[in-house]
Amino acid sequence: MVLRAVLLDFNGVMINDEPLHQSLIQDLLLEENLRPNLADYEQVCLGRTDRACITDLWQRQGRVVTEAQVNKLLDRKAIRYRETLATLEKLPLYPGLEDVIYQIRAANLKLAVVSGARRSEIEAVLSLAGLTDRIQVIVSGDDLSVATSKPAPDAYLLAIHRLNQQCPDLHLAPSECLAVEDSFAGIEAARRAGVPVVGVAHAFPYQMIHRRADWAVDHLYELNLAWLQPYYGESTPTPAPQ
Figure 1 (cartoon, rainbow, N blue to C red):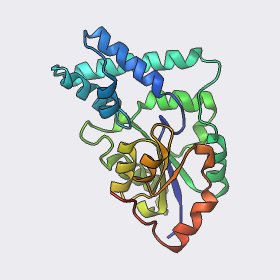
Figure 2 (spheres, one colour; figure 1 turned 60 degrees about the vertical axis):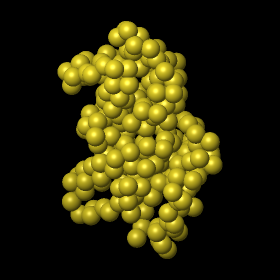
Figure 3 (cartoon, rainbow, N blue to C red; figure 1 turned 90 degrees about the horizontal axis):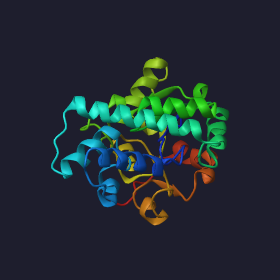
Figure 4 (cartoon, rainbow, N blue to C red; figure 1 turned 90 degrees about the vertical axis):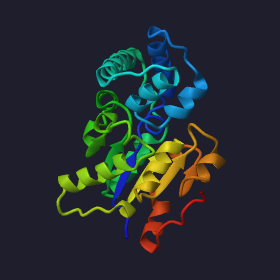
């Protein structure tokens, strides 16, 4: 078994935009005469798709939204997200992202983004950052239903399936991938898919991340693929305590 692909989460791993997402969701709630609640946001939104986030937030306040209504809310948020990005002098990319991508390319590994964000949001950031041609596959929230949002394993399994479709001779297995996640839902999704996972403590304390992931780092810039390679060459990582 060898490491052959890296599957990066997006929000909270590649870009530090969680405060922006929270603000945009709060604006939508207020516009719909609903009260924002930080505890609710953290419980049902972090690491999950915007569709799952909005659906659950509305239901917690006694509102049932149709698919058409959710789509309109998602479109409003996506437009505002891209508009906000266009006003920034510098993208809030996490330090170390370019180095991690360089390590992936130097090792001739496949690279996919596996996220609950809208595809239009991911593509906007990748374009502005000049990273579009570095990514082989994108799995976004547009590919997932509420039921298949992280922590379900579907996003990771879909990314692996698409990489295998793109390269028919690849025969990529989950155990040959590395996921990089910052949220509890994302770590659980990767592990349920059979993908070893590095947790980065961008959103939660190191010890909380370390208890859930196979490995943990405080910051993305600490991630060294050369350090992980022997684990793939010698044995499967020891599962983290539940």
